[in-house]
Length: 410
Image (cartoon, rainbow, N blue to C red; front, side, top):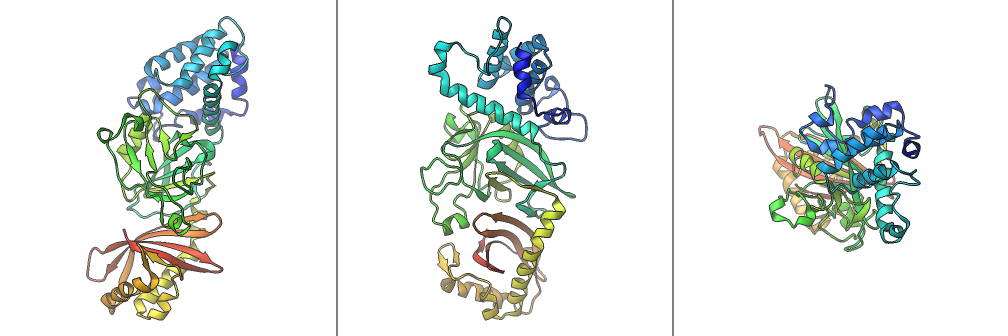
């Protein structure tokens, strides 16, 4: 029976995991999550409804599953995975299924690559259902966010999943997560045209409306600042890395199918566009996210905070030799070497001399691969003033010391 086949897809899914699926692709609220039929935001319903079909077939409720699959494909005719499942359910009325996408033998050869992609998509959607982040945990990169960072995004390429957070008064809260596609050649972008998605810490730089884009990009695009300063330091090239949608004939794309961008279903992207802010929303893209308790993340950032405070004291003291010791030999600020940039730093020291300067709205984001780096954003506000410049620094750990290799006004 079809139920036995689909049941194998759920062998590792617990009842708790099933319950979490009801909110897996949509905003999480304290109140009960509405049923798909009552949810006005169709962004949440397509994936949830597909998982509900899987659950019904696994429970051997094939007639109800077929009815729900029929409604799903009517509402989303371009949802190819849902169409595949619907076709399987129709076939299962007359004969047993052997695999997901059990098409006739003569179609296997022609449709083999597409079937493999749809099976991968199904597997990754279910993997995200089974392997939920621990309750209350956050990605390890988010050491501290300021109130100016109202939202944050983290991408786990291994799960084809994007996680959206709200920065609340009590810390980061996971409010939604979505299936995504990444580069055809995977991740770790290093050069123009390599069809890889970059790894690192980025920021949304603009919001491109649907009217300004080709249909290929779907309902809009959110460009990010690849290459960032660490990428440039490492000689990486390329540009035009966006979070964007899908063309009209595709609800979603295969897990590995983009030229390097992060691609979401249009309803999912629409919700993100309506939610996040440009310039202040960090986007972490990782091969595999490490989830930690918020208290643990903050504790891991304490040694670096000591270095940041020491830099601040050195700047306030006016001791240029001491201050310059915090900068790397290959420091760069928008094309200026340390020697070329030193007069700017000396001018800031002179301007603030004799006045108390506070660091306001400090955010700390940590990226660790072959090196340990920090992306720090803060405002420098002098005593007697209400506003100041917003700066961003990139620090790298050299032995036991943290040093700055980029600093500039945002």
